[in-house]
Length: 223
Image (cartoon, rainbow, N blue to C red):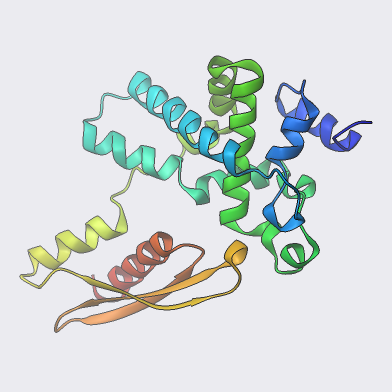
């Protein structure tokens, strides 16, 4: 009996993945909400490292930037949002294996779940066919992000930190003011304040992303 739906197997192959062990790919696409014994988390752990090395090598090869700028671009290109954008571009949400409640809660479109599963698929590719094929796949799927402006501009938190110092203000203070929703679709609201200047709030799917969005909003208002 096939472990994968035939449409999902065909989609994986068409996207460029090497599908031999169907159970491995089923695992990569399975969310913990299904209650199955194996879900994507172990493969996500591996895929995160595969993606990081693939992007780092690519940046080093094509850019003469210093370490700080390379790190800035790397962080942007491997972020959950970047991974989720790639996942949507290849129609990954159509093939996610979710429990009913997680699906009803919108997990199939959330950056956190999509980003995690995208990494899990890269981990599965590494297991099935080795790093070189996973790296080549990353270069194809991330080509648009790499050629675009991802990570080229200064990170909003760094920009705000420098703005505060340049205006002789205290460093920005970030505060988590709310966390809501189930773990697979959590929402975090963060407030950033600069003493005697003002504050701004933003909500996102992770605390880090909410801090970034709050810093960006603060600079739009006060910068």
